[in-house]
Length: 168
Image (cartoon, rainbow, N blue to C red; front, side):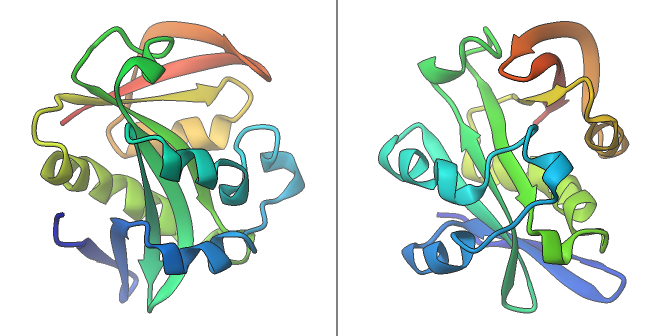
C-alpha cells in the first residue's frame, strides 16, 4: 500500500488515503446539499459494493484527522461503459461532506489524485470520470485540475454526462 499523499491549502493539510474499516462510521453520517444528490451517491450508498468488489478501491480525503471526502477508483470490466481503455481508472462517487464544502478540499484533492492514483496503480495510464452536463460547477473543477473533455458523452441515470480524462 502506498504512503498517503498530502498537500496544503490555506495552511490546511489535505491527505488522500485508502479507506479503513474504522472510517465507516463517519462516512455513514455524510450529507450532501439537496441539489447534489441527483449527481452523486452518498458514501453509505456505495461503500459496501466498493468494499466487496476487488476492482473498486475506496478512499477518503482527510484534513486535521477529519474525514471530509470520499471517492472510489474502479478498474476492470465494470468500467467498460465508461472507457474502452483497459489501463484506465474510473473515478466514482467523489463527494465532500456538506459541512466541509466551500473550503477548497475538493479542488486540492483533485490536484493530488493523479499522482496518488499513479502511486497505487502504476500500470494504469489514465483516469476517467463521468460528470453530469447539468453539474457545471463540478465540470469546472475537473477542468481546473487537469481533466479534459474530449467530446465523448454518454447517457447516465440522470441525463447527459461528459466523459473527462486525465493522464496518469
